[in-house]
Length: 513
Ligand code: XMP
Image (cartoon, rainbow, N blue to C red; front, side, top):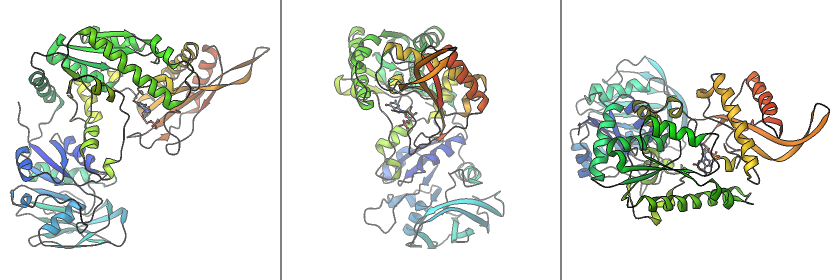
């Protein structure tokens, strides 16, 4: 296994902690985010070249607020403390931290006094992002002030002998103008890390790791047609060939030609062994008469488990289950309670493990979404799939409002296909985070030729978003809306009206159900 230079990020609960890991990896240096209170032995075992202490919502004086192992300061490693991390550093090393009566939040102008190496290349003045309650009022011995702001006499401090640095602002957020170069100075200039973290090397390591974990065993895994499960499947298939079987369940609420595309992309082009199960009748029968959104989710989730288990039994003994878990899910489930722990995602196959006694294989568990996309490209996965908008597990069931019937699903599928086609044609697909059509549970009056019509309504939705926790409605150009509307009304029989959704999240959600 290749030994990369690594940076350890100790997480004290900031909502920005995962962004630090992102910034470090963007510099091609490997980093991991761990609980801020792990033991000195665990820190040593990680063999970091440097350590970053994240921010956090606590005060160093609060009972129960997280502190690092005090042995940390004796390791002889460079340490960068950000916000609460700077306060921890100050407090532990004999300086003073003062309780703030109010939170300072927002933009501030940073004024450089000296570079202290870490701020080398920074302009005399630059905008930074502050978000803190307490603040440093006296740095520890050996530290010098590197930069100030109007409200922060110790906005950046450093001890260049021990290579300890503290920043009151957040260099990891994009609002901080020159945050990237600060990380670059710390990682490359001060910690002397090699920039050798690349997707190519990740493939080799991951393949070796899957082989080591699985031995001569067998792995099964569900694929949805989405990016994560596809990339995980291709990687596993590369590692163990036909001892991996992907199970692709057609649940009857997929988009047009989805099954065909999955088989083409994965089986024919990338030679992944796939069991294609058409269970659409089972799903649609179970969904008959169901109109409540959460009930639809429940029915689909439970049926998926049944169908998957039946298929797994037919395939014979597998000892392992492949899951496309990503790093944000891992952080979410392991990080202690802080703002970063409140973010939730939708887990669709959680129930599988309870019933089947399988060990998990999770080759993507250290990657962020855009890294998975990069990995997919490297593995030769189709470019349109790699950059695809997310598609929910319950699929068109939560976009076909009201009763789900084969006919209504066909109407929705056609409208959705035309909508996405037009967006791609206009070159807008990659600017949009998610776009889809929704079939409304009502009919409206229209006129076609000399006749009155009474037909269904399609709503078009498009949003921009980075994490889907919040989203803005996308300002779709009128000419694109016009061609979508014309085509849908002309080409999809049963639809006489098209509307565009102009609601942001919150208070609306991305999906209508
Ligand atoms: P909402 O509607 O909650 O959607 O604003 C945020 C993101 O999550 C997706 N979504 C789901 N994904 N199972 C999934 O796998 C679900 O039940 C589900 N509901 C919403 C949605 O498409 C959007 O990307």
